[in-house]
Image (cartoon, rainbow, N blue to C red; front, side, top):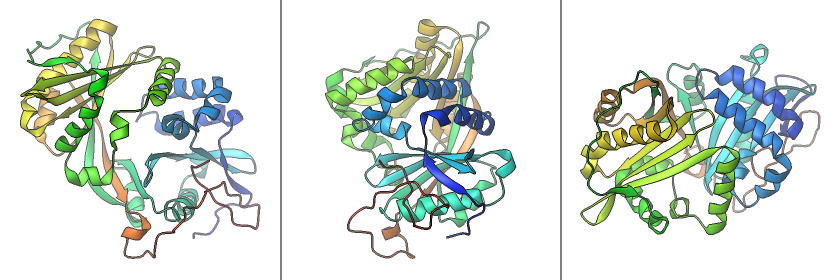
Length: 357
């Protein structure tokens, strides 16, 4: 465990009163990497409906992950934060970690992550996953902490403005909206489409693709609060679903995110599906920004995007730190997971820190 870099240093679960300062810190740290207006809206909605959403976090993984934010304070002043989410029962994702400019480079990040790993990830035998921007000096820092690079993630954007010439729509036999009862079939498409090396890194379950009625109702409430509309389309050919197009539209901020899952034998559908998505968004919402991400495993994916006018905006490394039981330097995993709690350097007792309630 690295030495504590400051006296009177605490890690606390975020409270409603912290959200205003958190918004400012987040904006200054990630202004060039994420849709800031969308993030601001999310934080403000969280503050507005805090006392409604917080109790619901016991029933919804999405809402629970929304509140897995821990703020770092020195003498009561908020100087940093870390947000984590739980992908499943064995994997934890570090969403964001950032500190005020005047406190960077002074060992805070190393200290916070050391606590996170020793008292949460290793104690509960979690894999840890994160993304780091290509060219970011933190890449080597994460390597020293036991992360290894798995693949590169490319982020593309297309700006729909009045001068943009829409691409020609390609006829796609079998293209239609996804029926609710078909959602379970998407899991089988996922298994057939995503390389096994990546499926081992991020393990998705059948329940994510075919959620319960309660989860669907909570999803609807979340989308309503976020002013988000979600649309799912599929291509059915040869008696099975071979491609899935998902469109998430944040219409208040004119931002749209599309994702594609395509069976390898039907990769030729990619450009046609992207063209369909662009036309649907332009018709329903007008001007705005469309973004999507792809793995760098196939240059053909990049070509299809660039032909339609998308430009590569950012690139990230997907980093993976195996659970303690899988590493050579580990002992046995605990038979009973520990319950992580906030830690304070003002107290002599060791306390747990982490993202579980």
